[in-house]
Length: 589
Image (cartoon, rainbow, N blue to C red):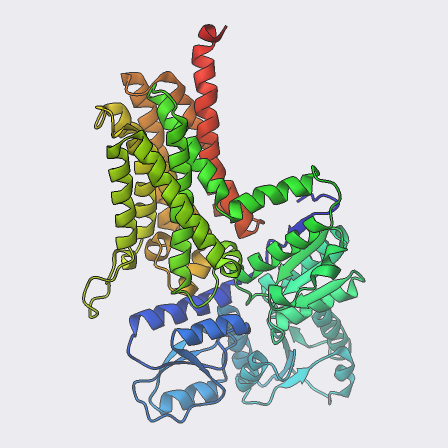
């Protein structure tokens, strides 16, 4: 990926690895399905303090040793690093239900050690003797394994006949190769297994590549995380300015703002929302250091500011309202555009305000900024809502009543009106309801509110553009939820991808895109929509591009990804404008 002289590169491998994701998902599933039972993890589930604290807030407590609890209902989850067979047996003997969240890569190493120990081999483990993974691995050799921390210790070994060498899965690749070479030189009969996790190898390789492409390096990860510390060590040895931080609060903005291009990587236990916060803080600090007003970075900062503050979404609502009028061959009324823009801005901010009162941690780039200026955001949202209602009243009483009713429904969405014994006490609690409610609200304010005063309701054209608008907004929110799946699961948000899985959600978005194409083609052919509507196929193509980005490891921050998605609303307005010019150009000259 090419970068500018003052760009930021996010490592493709940054964030949760397979083993960590599996362990966290398993713990969350257990917490959801075993409500009422005490749940523990044997040691911290993963080496990330923020994630461990978040799991604790969900009732999942870490234990430092085999527990002595008089609680037969207690359930214990084995951490991703694994434990020794002796500890596993002790847990089971005490009668606890044990769920094994050991990383499959670690389990593979455990099997190698167990097999070769039974064959009479001396087991050597290259790694940190104090790391929980290494302690667990040693147990599979009945605690007779020797742990090597560097190649010099090879010369201290006694004479051995049969040797099996394995590595801690997060070991430094070059360091392990040095130990293996020295061991093979002294004991040619040594059997060497490359048990370093492929994810670890890729991260280390990528941080080395980033060092050659950038002027500074930032590694995000727990200070107690072995793989994060090794990434930080590789970064330091590159000779470039390097920073090992746990969260964005640890970042020195003044120092980082003086650096040019910056490479960012993260340990295997670092959640995405922490990486996003770091990327935003770096980009903000770098942007301030740029000279001139109309340089590329300041224009990018302006766009990101609009995305972050929901002003971009408000512009998108105005574009969709314009689009709806053009494809139905209606007059474009500026008051209708303003109504849509103000209303969408207001409901987005108010939704965030309500969510911030129930969420223990920030889960996105917007919430971080929002919490710093919550009162100011709330005042501007209420003012925007008042403007939207006032403008709709100027347009007509029916528009005002519909928008007012929509506002009341939005408030009722959060009200817990069902009995406390029910799982779903409000509409908000229904899994996946957010995607449908947001899409409905946008569709009503963009297509129905401008026409409710006219005798044009339930026309084929209005119904067609209503469904198209619903699908484009629904697809945008579903895609955002796919990208935010990890943090949504951790925060307990039952979005559509959390409920049905990311694969099924992608299939649903593809089906929505196909339906959008079908609506455009058939409605233009039947005359329900004017010919300029055919230009809206660009929105469908753009949606497919976004879906492709979602299917790979997108090397963008959450802020940029949100902006990319919301650009589809702008494309709809531009496509309608361009289509109108194209089909009416003879009348314009």
